[in-house]
Length: 104
Image (spheres, rainbow, N blue to C red):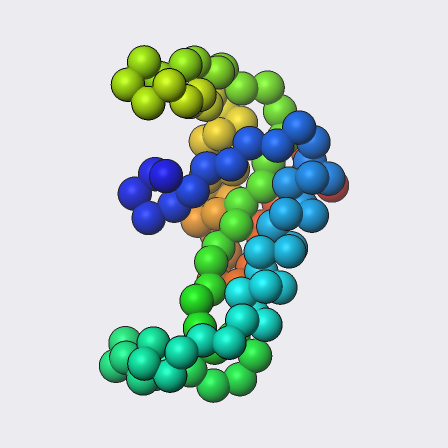
């Protein structure tokens, strides 16, 4: 996780897009508890096809610098590819998937 975001690496752009669309579809189709939908700051999205949790997804493909994190034992990803994906995520609204030209 990166603050309130997730960074996920895939073997291919196709896999990244398939995952991104599946996540968006499952969030739209989820049955959200009324207690969640009744929260004051969620009132404006509690009706219609976008009720419940919505996420923004940015997708870019390319080479990354991979380093093993000695604290977690997991891999960390760095470089322009990661930065571009993060910038794409920042350009869209919840429920959307933004991709770079390289992904198309």
